[in-house]
Image (cartoon, rainbow, N blue to C red; front, side, top):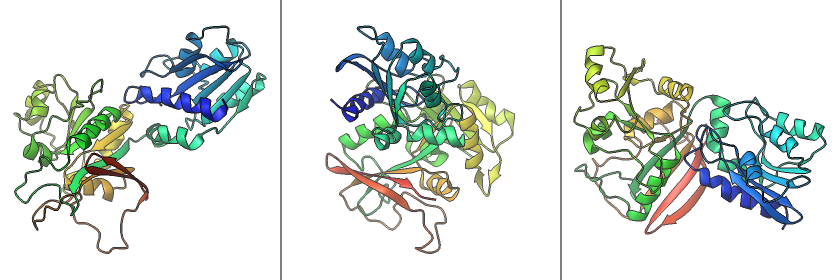
Length: 362
């Protein structure tokens, strides 16, 4: 096997940390000696051993002289875990093959430098595109301090989120809806507007097997979330934050009694300032946000330049209706040249439905 094949194995291991490593990256590691894999590991969840140390701990023989394949540059600073470069030197590895460079200012080439100065052969950039794609969330968060924001919606082929009556269950089929649940498990928070809470009374939890519930964020400028809403009634069990511009502590008290965190933010125009909300989330270790409606919230996030990715689940159906909602509301842009571009589109078939994913250009 060659470097690319071993790195593919490391990538598959890294994916096992999906949803659990936040705000750390997903990382996988393989240790090879005399053409045999003698150890492997991945970063299983935030605060626990990094992939390199997991792989070294799993070695079936002395790793001295072996090659380490790791999807991300080894860390060289003390965090919740000690530097991985120390473990590599102690194990007397002969070579380290790296997929992605680490943009974390505390690492950013320093890990590679330490290894090379110690006489270890280092090969960089093996399957770099694949390794970079694995950690798009981490790379954005560690360099900006703000969450990576994914705008997600399901619509018919004629661009409707619901019928003119407001009924939206179900636009897409079971396979597409199951895929949505995996995304809720991947991203650290899920955000909706108060209109979605009032209209749909959603749970906003991850129902994928082995998934992790996201932090629920409700944008509610005037604090109109019903106390009877599922998100309020279950706030003692699933972290729930209400972002509001109401400063009246008495008005917020019933929500706090139910277990909600109520945080006051300034307004931008008529609504709570989404940029301020994202900054707050970033400072509280929320590295990613899945936007799930409504259309007004989607527009506000796009207008503020906060969206990084779009996930559009499209059902091959025509619903019609002048009054039926579309995915992005608000004022909109005045001219077809004044748009938010979506680039590098991929298409995935999910049963009868299709998922279009793309990166937002700014």
